[in-house]
Image 1 (cartoon, rainbow, N blue to C red):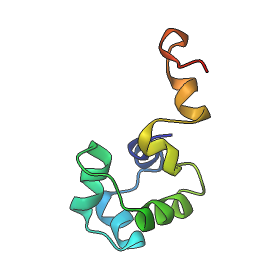
Image 2 (image 1 turned 180 degrees about the vertical axis):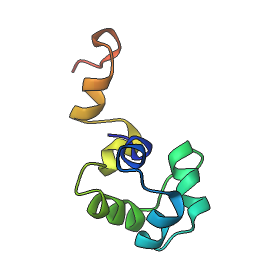
Image 3 (image 1 turned 90 degrees about the vertical axis):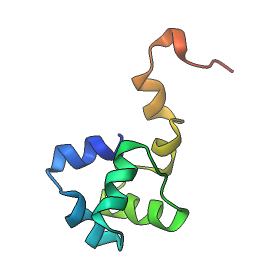
Length: 78
C-alpha cells in the first residue's frame, strides 16, 4: 500500500502524522507526493505507525504488493 493511500484511507492529516513520527507536515506532504523519500529511521516509524501496512518496499515498488498492482505484462519474471 502506498503511504498516500494509507493516509487517505485513514483520513490522517500531514501535520498529525508528522507529529507522530517527528517530521513536519511539509515533509509528510513531500513523502506522499514522491518528492522526497524518508530516511531509514523514518521509514521504520512509518511502518510502525501504519501497523505494517506501509513497508519500506512500498517506497521503491518491489515485493508482493507491488507485483499485485502491476499488470502481468509489466511484471519482471526471474
